[in-house]
Length: 391
Image (cartoon, rainbow, N blue to C red; front, top):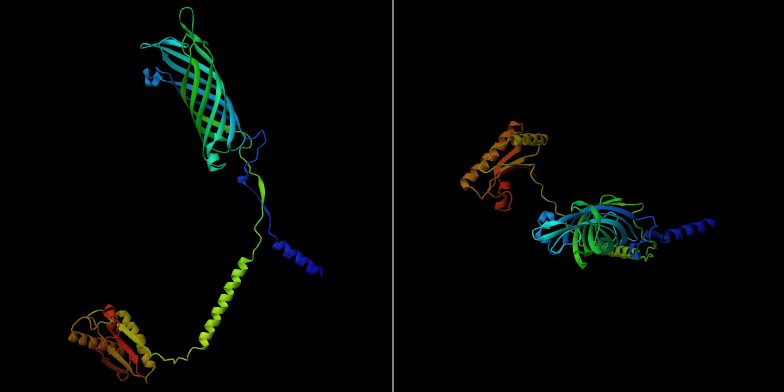
């Protein structure tokens, strides 16, 4: 009874589906610890200030340097934030002077400002949003938008009108910006990126103090280092396999029943089949030698074959053998074919006699029909000599 009890428990354990656990991305992703998913980025690049008169400059003189340093954190595979310090040099042309004046060009006043600012951005990883999170994906497209504040420095001049470094000048600027980061993964901690950014600047471009808004186009190349844990985990959920329905066993039983019914039918057909008279097929020739068209020459290989046939004949001295010459009736004239039949049969006879077969055992003849009635396509089978034991 105890043994039966243990056996029953074992059978129940084997029939109970095993529950497994796995991460389910459809449930979202877990928030990591606060110290995880931080990053720092350093970047440098160029910008073009879209002032109304800048197109008058030489092309190579329209661009200015810019740089930035950012610290940020991802709160999920999609949402993040960053804050950083940036440097931007803006160059423009005007006709009414302006903060940052440092010379003239044609009929314009040139101005230049170095702006040091602080910005904060919200980040959205479009690739993870649209294509699903993949920690080993090489390319990610990240869009962002934010605002900042810039402190302005302009060229400084002494009492003699000589350039004397940089000094605080004009009103500081508020900025609003948006851009696209083309991020490329090098390994789990390092990324390189191309950042394309559009910045709106509220600047003061003349001595009258009139506030004007301008656009600055910027491009950066940067390097990002990711701190601590850089990946995300989905919630772990139980996976319960479906309960067995015995459909497979039913299908196998139905297939077995079908095979049994088919075997029963075959057995009935076999038992009801009329007895057939077995007709023994006529024995074929002892040997057949084949020839090419128009030839009666016996090859070296066929000579060896006929030597073996001669040994069989000498081992059966009481048996006579018919040597019959054949030719195909599809090529050549009747006279040529009759001559070939006789020459082929006579050649085989000579080889057999040379190998010690008594002439009394040989009956040499020809046949004017086709050896194989298979049509003109098989004429090669009709050019032959057959050796057959007489019954």
